[in-house]
Image (tube, rainbow, N blue to C red; front, side, top):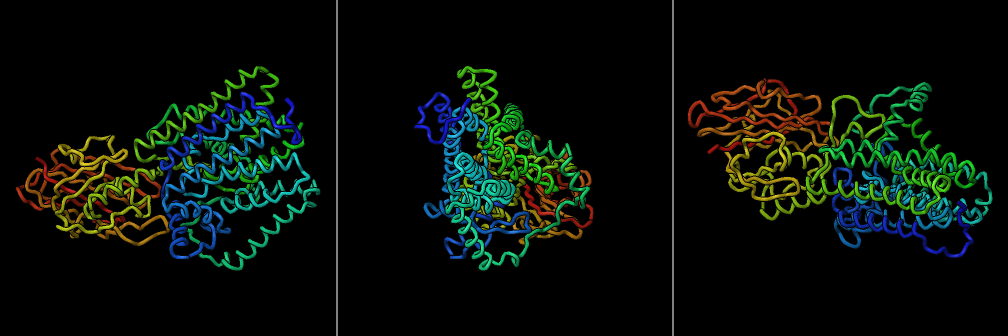
Length: 624
């Protein structure tokens, strides 16, 4: 297959082109239709708040988000994040704008690849650059959301520069400057581009190249004098995981098969690690990963015979080699910058193989249609589950390379649609924080910097005002607390139950909810400290049920319900217990069906008298 030259006349549309356009339209539809079904947690909320401080109070962002909490770059990402809010001051405007930007960048890259490398390569690129899991957050209010789109843009400009070395790099230099501010892992790609400019000095003789470099130097110098990034306080709350030092450690990082597998297979691990499991989507992710990696190998072999593609292959190899060498550990979003480059290399390999092994255009179209349909179908199925449940539990252990050892932990990721629906319901019913109960509500608070709390704190009527329990609709274990209650409202994946509460005291404190306002870092509130354990007191007129939700530190392990003491009551059925490891905390739901020793007895349910660090949300009601 001979790629068309840059000076060739306008190409007539081929079936490959129509299929690529169809895939782009399908991808664009998913990005925009499900734009509010994306992760909205502490990082996203922090960044949106930073931009609103700028737009509404004139507090200009001085630096980027803290990368690893240790170093800062110019604040280009915040200004990109603020552009949609200037049009409509709503998170949804960000989601729609970022989703459109991602699709537009891939679409423009397709036009550049079609011009310089041919329709087959361009089609395969489109089919392979839409990973199932990554596409769920490419429209979130998060810096990794822009990485794949910006990397596709830089890649397209780079391919054009490789085929037209006599043109200046003004746009390429500026695009790379923005990409570096969004995520510094792109610096490894910039190294290869710099080497190309040294080998091809004609690039450095172009005014456009130096104009771009000049703009970058002036902006960076101005920012350094203004922001003084070396004096910005670091935000790391805890040291990084211990890792070996020295030259032997560097060699171990680079030569570790487990680390390579964890990193290369990340597009599959992230889907396979979702709970509840999506076996068909995980299978699709595995097939797409296999197509990508085999294509990269084919592309490396074929690129050796192409002067331009050798540089793309070099960029991919240098990025992977240096990333694995320098990073003792990394996360799934580190790979977003290299994913479009691997997609191009794989597309180049598969296009060459198809020209040699199967010259039939129909066969090529069928294969690429299947690959694209698998990617879009997997995204659609993932969105549908996200829509139905309101959140995705992501396997935290497999989100990093090398993967984290020890017990499986989960990263609960609530969709913005669910959070908005919950907030709208609470506000429409004029509910107060003191009326809300349960682990699900507690988890939402902890995963959103308490940004979606009710505006009212304490309800009229105090502890005996009607209370509301928010529960997932699909309960793994039947619960006595909701038995006989009819949901008063439905949220995505959750139900709201109203009940008349019994008075509950936690260590003598009225109300049932015990939290602190003290922060550990920007995304974590410290749990309450109970120096003599936790004692719950209720006055029960008859058979009653007590539900307790707790968030405890990673070091705090509660005894099972059988290890709690019951005073002036007995349990009519074995107590219910659930334990979840979310992020760096232990979450518990405990439930007792209580028979008081006599009507109106003051019942106490207590842990052993040892120091505990736990937030508490307790509720009790009388059984009919």
